[in-house]
Amino acid sequence: MIPSTPQTRQSRPDAAGPLAQLSPASWDLSATLHLVNRAGFGGTPQQIRTMHDLGLQACVDYLVDYETVPPLPETAAGFRSDIRRPPTEEERAEQRRARVENDEAAIGRLQAARNQSDREDREQNDEMRKWWLKRMIETPRPLEEKMTLFWHGHFASGNRTVQDSYHMLVQNQLLRRHATGSFAELAYRIIRDPAMLKYLDADDNRKRSPNENLARELMELFVLGEGRGYSEADIKEGARALTGFTFRDDSFEFRDSDHDDGEKSILGRSGSHHGDDFVRILLSQRACSEFVCGKLYRFFVDDSPVPASPAAPAVIAAMAAQLRAQQYQLKPVLRSLFQSAHFYDPRVRGSVIKSPVQLVAQAVRGLQAHPRSLATLASGLEFMGQDLFQPPSVKGWDGGRAWINTSTMFIRQNVMVLLITGRQADFDESSNAEQTWDPSHLVTDASGAQLPPKQAIDALLEFCLSVPPHADRRAELAAFLNDYGNRIDRGSLLRMLGLISAMPEYQLC
Image (cartoon, rainbow, N blue to C red):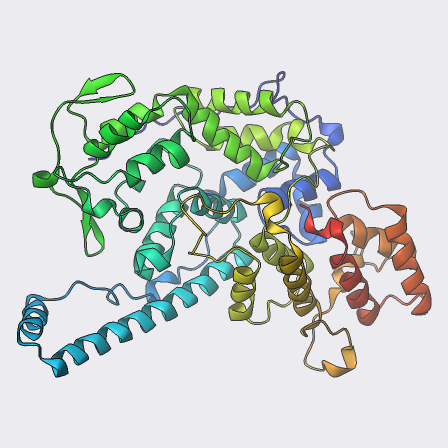
């Protein structure tokens, strides 16, 4: 049985300290845009104005308390759970007979069935990539999907190793259910997750031959952080505590006969520890809250190698203290962070490099660009270094500057060209008659009236770039628009968006 986690009151940020709240006078459209981009995947100018009018606290509450917003219709039910089903007793007997008798025809049929299962699983994985990308683009609860993506990179596992797309789907739904709930609850559940158990070979963790992978990653990557107060002996003892944790078909199973119930000593605590005891001991360490909040800070605030603000360590420490006080409930910490003046500090704006998912989802949601082919966009994410359901390793994605290199920049620009024009690296509108997207909503005022050329340029730059644009950027667009006859129409807007999306600043969030 998973230990229950006490529910705690949702607290408000203190008036002073590292998480001091942003003053009402500083809550402007720019701050609103910053919040909506960071806590989600962006929104249109009209949506930003609506969110701004709510006020800071109500806007943050709307994003964080997303359970009050009706979710998307559930579409995951169509995915099959039986592609990798366990063989029946009759099928096992046939496999044994074929091997013993060296029946080549039967062996060939069995191999053909396995190949068919492999193909179907790959195809389902591809469909799941499109399904999740579509959710992130269309969701009315953006923080829910943003945190699901965060946990996918934190509790990382990939289908090339798991080889069961349905188990990856089950894990994805687990991360979504607990996205902003209790980190403790998530830690208890991840050691029971079939995809994680398979990914780390923990399903074969038996008392006669303990497998250390899950215990090691719980300490190094999931709960405490690498080198934070544990030893190799602690890892070995943790592995013993996790013996017997496995799964059958799609469900967790604890096999008592495989469990080592002997005395163990983990981080100085002795007893006949079970897997839950191991997790509980890790959660009791101060390093846990500091590690988790450090990762949240890098994800939501600043992923620079050296923090842009000298206040970063104090803010992370304050977040960690609140996480401990709230018994690992995440919502109060996120609420405080998103309402804090530090979150809106000019030094941290534009200090996060857009992940490939952020680049695509924010462009579609904010610009209202047509998503074109979800299959093409999902493949684009892979080529840009963020293949959904397939992080590169158990460490997840490095993020930050690792997103940018000569190869990925080329693909990032081509993806933006595709979203804006419907074509690959081609702004010839006349050769793209099927394109119907009209970006005029980006250059209208609150009443819906079209802005004049100079104001239209300012509006595009301020909406698309997360840092104040250099005067040269405005000059580039003004020169183009002058050559175009100073007309603000669909053609000129498409071309200006193409120029803006090619700016280095556009890669920042």
